[in-house]
Length: 165
Image (cartoon, rainbow, N blue to C red; front, top):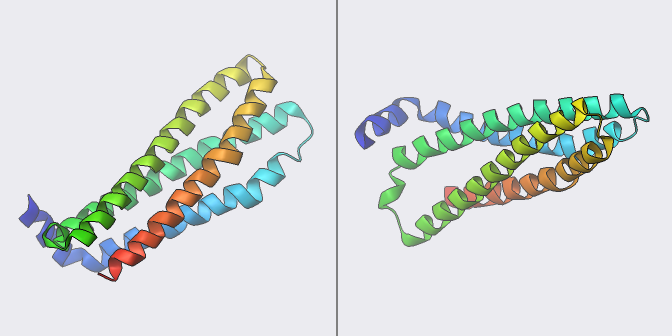
C-alpha cells in the first residue's frame, strides 16, 4: 500500500501539494467570509421567515463547502505523509503530525455538530419555532465558525512548522 501511494505521490507531488494548500486557503477564506461578512448581513434582515430561511440556506451551503474542503485537505495530507515518508522521521515531526491529526479531527467533529444542528434547524423551520432557529444560528455563526477558524489557523501554523523540518 505504501509503495503504491509513494509512487502516486512521486508522479503527482506538485498537484497534491497544490490541492492541499489551495483547499486550506479556500477553507480559511470561507470561514473568514462566514464570520466577518455573511453573519452581520444575515442578522440585519428584519423579517423572521426570510432571516431564518436565508440563515439556514447559508448554513447548508457552508456545510457542504466545509465537508468538501476538509475531505480534500485530509486526503491530500494523507498522500503527503506517505509520499514524503514522514513515518521515518524524527520524534519532533511525529509530535507535529499527531497534533495536526488531532486538530483536524476536532474540525471534523465541529463540522459534524454543524450538520446535526442544521438538521434540527430544518425541523424547527417547518414548525415555525423561530426562537430555537435564532439560537441555533447564533450558535453556529458565533461559536462553531470562529472555533473552526481558530483550529484551521493552528493547523496552518503547524503545517508551516512541519514544512521546515
